[in-house]
Length: 165
Image (cartoon, rainbow, N blue to C red; front, side, top):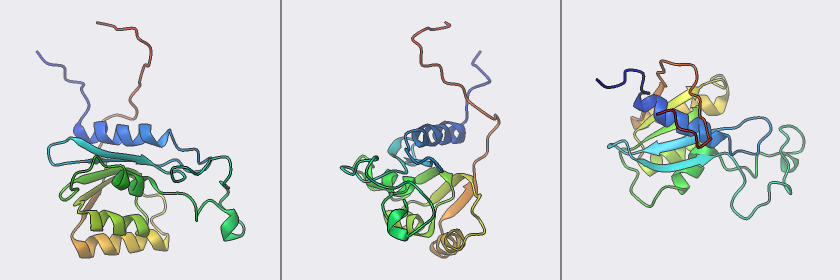
């Protein structure tokens, strides 16, 4: 008889997005994203961070102050990184799992890439203008979006080489 406590596809892919977010150096907000095709194959992963070749120690991570002294002009969002880090295939028809509802800039990249569904964990900035614009863009372009459905609060990973079998 097969196990009954295995994780769903949504839990699996959102788990990968959450794990990817752990790579972010941002002290305030860590976001991860995972793109999967229609056959449930992972085709792109990303987290919010600086572009390749830009040192995490040479750029600011603060949220407030003069624009050039904040993280905002420098950080690449998780969704855009996942699109840019894809394995070189057409993303048309794919879905993206993101730990945070995408901003308007990422929404444009999602639409342009051909992704057809956005699954998100948190919509904590739903009242911000950029998220409202994202939803308008997604609705207009026919992109589905939904909060992830999970049956468990957490999934524990044990990175030791011990095996319970």
